[in-house]
Amino acid sequence: MNDWPEGWSGGNRGNEYGRGSANAQPESARVMRQVRRGPQAPPYGAGVPPQPTYTGGQGYDEGQNGYGQGGYDNNGYDGYNTGQVYGGGGPGGPEGPDGGRGPRRAPNWRRRIKWTAITVVTVLVATTIGTYFWADSKLNRDVDLSKVIDRPAGGDGTNYLIVGSDSREGLTAAEKKKLHTGSAAGKRTDSMMILHVGDNGDTLISLPRDSNVTIPSYVGSTSGKTYPNTGRQTKLNAAYAEDGPTLLVRTVEYNMGLHIDHYVEIGFNGFADIVDAVGGVTIDIDKGFKDSYSGANFKAGKQTLNGEEALAFVRTRHAFAASDLQRTKNQQKFLSALAHQVATPGTLLNPFKLYPTLGAGLDSLSVDKDMSLWDLASMFWAMKGVSGGDGTSMNMPISGSTGGNLLWDKAKVKTLVNELNNDQKVTVSGN
Image 1 (tube, rainbow, N blue to C red):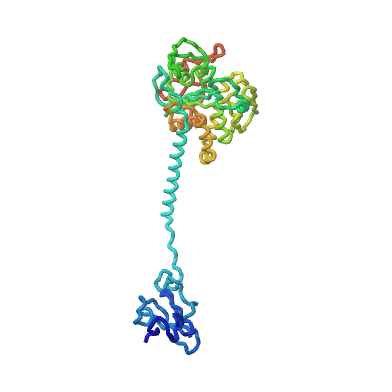
Image 2 (image 1 turned 90 degrees about the vertical axis):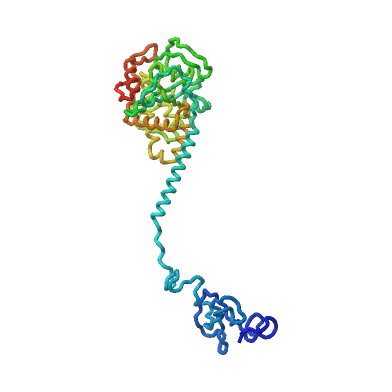
């Protein structure tokens, strides 16, 4: 007989509690099928029949006792203090036969290492590509070597003309005073070097600014006018002052017979900025010297120079008897120390040093239109190698002087150029 009255409204429903029942006692809790209850003493005292428990029937069916097949069983109500929480596992379940969690699956380290490696490589490649395009966009390619006329044939290897100019462009009055640059208008070359990069050793040759040269015929870089060769002789740095980089390249090629492939120039401020960005450069000075013109005041011994001090060191010439030759030696010595400082892991692997150094260098460089970053990197590593003893570092061979200008030794220069053009090991010695 059904426990429920025939109707859903009105009337006394017997001992049932709720839904309008007249019974003062609540009916047993309905338990979801995931919750299993064990038998327990009647909760409401003697005389009260055990209450049915819902075991997960298949729906409400008025024709059966409770909800569908299985409806309520007679296991009783245990007060919710012994049941298993939803999802509990039984024998063979996910938590094992004792109800505890089974052993965790061991991590797949091979898979983790693989994806970590892929991620690291991807980041490195993306960073490298981004850095390349960033650096490439900062190069000032404003020197057009196509305007140089009557050029000698190129030889084996690559020849760079590297120039340090005394340009004061962009410097404030305070910066000019601090760097001891003076206030002269225009630009001149304070240092000039030829770097030959080849398969049989690299060679760095300093060209004294006071070298006696002939100004050849040339086409003006801005006017486009052709200026004939009048046999005029002057100091090498006067060529740059007269018509800039293209006339300087034309003059070097004409007087040496050596083809120049690339041109690189850096000014006062850029040079000082690079030294400061790298954190200073340590150098061992053989003999102390002073020079009020450049601001130099150095004692002998190992010391770290900042940008201002470094500029004074490479510009000083009035403190030496052989002024220009000693200065070129100091320039080579300092560039060696600078290249080694930039190439240390402390700079290359530290983005807080590397990017400021790259930025300072690239912002201050003027190069020819065909110069790529790979060419620039090749030049830098060759300079580092030469300065470290992996190549030849020398001054231009000098045979004497005239009117204060230094005369090149023509026989030695001819042999030197021939060895460079054929990418042979240099046998000529300089001053």
